[in-house]
Image (cartoon, rainbow, N blue to C red; front, side):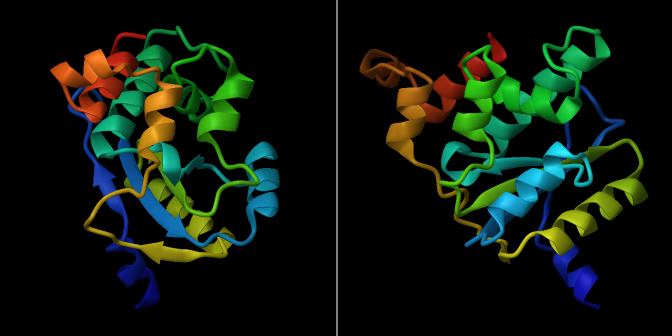
Length: 181
């Protein structure tokens, strides 16, 4: 079954603070229909956070932002009107939503993307994942080497100094900045 084999290529994140929420992460490479995907996300016909893979370091990096967004939602403290936008905003070191979209979201410069789908119902989550798979014209990957991120751009966007890197890894510095934003 093609769909079953596809499900094995996505990663399920488990957030201990939010066990009621199922999170699916899928990486697509060589995406050809960015413009159509942006239109679908804006019109809310595609219920997914679509991120530029160059800015995502790890599942920990992504999970920290998702956790923060869910925490904000649970406490009625969101800076945006939608959970998916809140995740994008929580990834960003900025409070400007447009800047967050430009740096972390799907843009004309994006060739590889990370899709994040969330739901409290597992069947509904699988339906969202299926919808993204059908919409994206690109290769679904299960790359055990991790995300293909741009280390220099990540360091620059998060303003990680060489002094900070003397104390911890880039990933540790980025996660700390997200968690303390």
